Length: 610
Ligand code: F6R
Image (cartoon, rainbow, N blue to C red; front, side, top):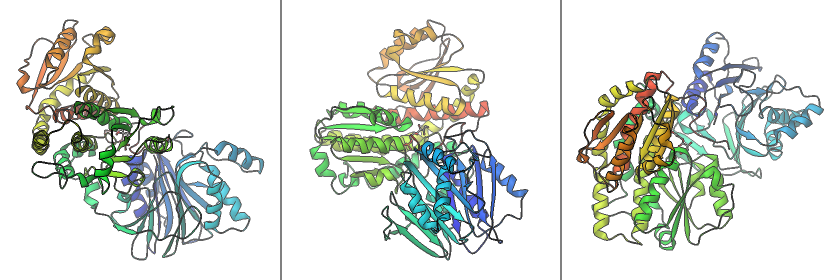
């Protein structure tokens, strides 16, 4: 949550900061601000409520603001509403400014102590105590770097910060604990940002800070120190991302772009991981074979959409005799566990920075779970660093807050893991070859499913005046129904719930009336007859159904039943294919509702607060 950018250069860095903020807007967008050290060695600060565009307008009204050292921030409110006074950068006095992503857990006690010393607070945020703390160390004679070093020792919580001082005009100090931070290295200029996407237009060379690192950018010198303050050599990495990969291109929204990119994302995720007939186990890491040989069960941990991918995989694992549990990370991390023997912990995450998932992994390690594996879309992320084995989803940057291609590529990666562990159980070589062949068909089948868009667009009209929707599915398609409901609620703000279709009669049937559309997915699998019976139960009570059905189910339109045929697919990949029309439906409903599709209210892409 929240995005940070900073720069020290020999040119005016305001355009760089603003461009970086635009790229980080997915991390939060309720207010934004910028502070630069100007030519008179004063700090100029501008903040505004709303998205980056509002900050740009405010800066247009203040054309004199320029500087060669500066910091900027886009906020997702945690402490205090989205007001100008709560927007970052926060200042202590007039010569020190700071941006922060994260939460200071002990802010209340620090605030009390600072108030007792006479500090007057300008905001309701937890961040302001940090800049006040730094101010006090500087007042006692410390330079900016040492003041930051001393301050972070007194902070509890997970955060990343960037700080500038008008008294050291070419210096920018950053630090990370828990939240991500990268240092971009240009020619005679250095940058700081929450992720690489923010800086791709100015550099492709990055130091990825380790947890606990502090960075001192002083003129053209960059010094990275570990949490003990000891200088460290971190490897300079060249990003393979292109600036275009984080641009909208011809598409109206990132979500639509990312839905359409799914066949390529899936092909990229499979590339180099499978041969003609089998899986290349080394794709998971050098120790994969040893870890998989030792694995007797799987514990999946994830949040939101990634959790739904985990729920699908549970059916897949257990079908091949591999016991599997799936738990929401925030629940996993805060309860007592009976730890199973030889249990592989699998985390799923698009961002690799979701704090609940990271904390749950730390907890799993602490209480004695076995090895860990992450399926992740962000190569240099914390989850990747913390895990023994890694299988990257090669979906490319996902900018739209509603996850689409990250989900389908997670499912593909999970199928590879299911094959790897299934080999040690019920999976024969012939069966493996069949599953691999089905995976190879996926990109073409995904593109076929995307062709349903014009029909789905028409159906979306029916939702214009609706307030509630029910999604139904059975077996592996129950999690797909959950995912469909999540997509609809997060971007169209229509209340949506998902149920296993067989559970309807145990309560939810009472909700059915002609005003609440019921959406179901109907693959051609062994549960089809039961699902058809559940659909009839809804129709008999006046409910209006929209069913996405495998063409071979031969379901036909009837009163109160709209059927959209989906090309026939094998049951092993059906959940991936049936996800596509549900993504498109939520997208087109959101368009009709006029919401901000890529930046739905109250949400942020990377959830780095608990
Ligand atoms: C919903 C969505 C979220 C994320 C969740 C976990 O569309 O994107 O539910 O799936 O916040 O994020 P990651 O996968 O980055 O850990």
